[in-house]
Image 1 (tube, rainbow, N blue to C red):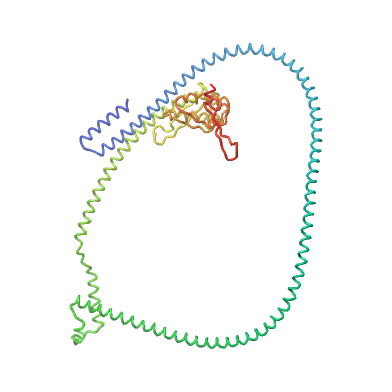
Image 2: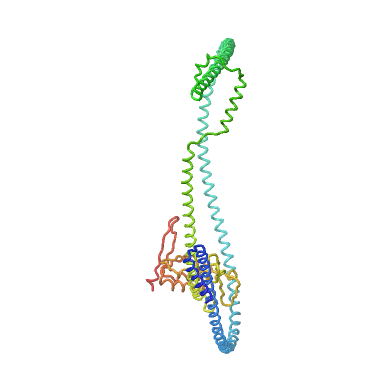
Length: 489
């Protein structure tokens, strides 16, 4: 009630600020209102958590009292059954000792017969192996004999061909020796002629090298002369350009024609150095004055328009920022409210599904780690199966972790059920009892959604409506085999 009163007082202050057009104070007050609203949501969530915990505690006390009475009744009946079972156990023990003696005698006879059979079977296997190896060796020797006969015939044929070839080669060799002697005599004559021709070639080449050396010196001298001539021409052209530029500058800047004053006599006695110094002083004064900018007014007008445009853009950005901040605050408030509503629904569904997968005596809960900051808070999962009080979910067994994760998954799934749901080997770490609970839960949810389950568990396969198996009768060719249990039912 104090929070609502404070919110109402802040709201009245906002109305007063609107009348006085104090926008900054309005935004600050709206921020405080949003913070108070978030605090109210957090306090409401804490109250709901406390109430739920109280209800769970009261329910557990009532359940424990009922269970205690049932246990006392069960103990009395169990004692009577125990006495009768002890009497039956004594009778069964006596008959069991007689049966065990008979079983030992029969087992000894069976072991002796088994040993004789194994020894006979071993000797038979050894003899069969010897016969098989002898047959294989006989086939191998016959194949070798056939290969040797074939090789002898081939070698005989090759030997006769080689003898004929040797006779022909000897005749060709004698003819080749005579031709070789004639060629060697011709070779000596040709070598003498070649030596004379080489001597004449070397004499001519030396003379040609001397002529080429003289020609290179003359070409080099000509290139040096051409280079010097091109430099002189470039210098002359440069001087002509400088003279033309000077004439044009005198004509434009000083209204003086150079051709007219060349023939005039000097009227002053100043030296060239003094005139050059005076010219340098004048140039320096002109440089210090700077150039006149005739477009300064236009540049000022353009900069003024640019400044006004940027100022207008700045004002638009400031107003857009304020609007965006207000929108962000509204979105955060709406998101926090929707998050709390969805969290409470998921929490309620998680508790129901967890009890369906375990027992009604088992408890589970979802707790916000930082309820005052819903945008960055974490969610702690608390699961306490019967007989265990773990401090964290990591202390549960593999099957219990799987069932807890399945319960959380279906708690979120129940918020907005989908037409199809695919589960890939969710029941792998579960034992038979927990697989039965899992399949019962799937049957309940299958009234609103269609489930596709990938599994290797026989109990899960037996609980489905249709089963599809993939087999490979031929390498690389898969085949789908469906079985519809609905037609059997």
